[in-house]
Image (cartoon, rainbow, N blue to C red; front, side, top):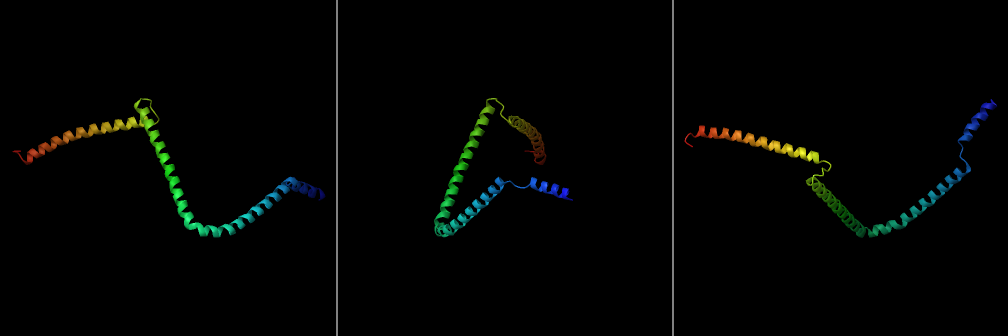
Length: 139
């Protein structure tokens, strides 16, 4: 029985923290408590100040947000325009940028569809000419 107890205690001692880990945990808890105290103190002191200044701070914050968002979006649009012009320049010079094969395929499909519609319109136009002459033989 004593042998099983010693084996059990040895397993427990294998997982027990050493003194460095205990001191680190104590320092962490102490530091956290101090920071929590100062956070509460700052909240008590600054909350009335923020309430008094909120008629000024909220519009100023909104203006700052809109200004920063506008500058950021303008920069993104300028970058997108530059990349688009660069891609188009490379495409016109025959350098085959990424996606140019899809553009070529779409261009060929549009040309084919336009040719098909033109042929269909010619045939349908002749059909309408015949109908017009049937409706008004003297016309």
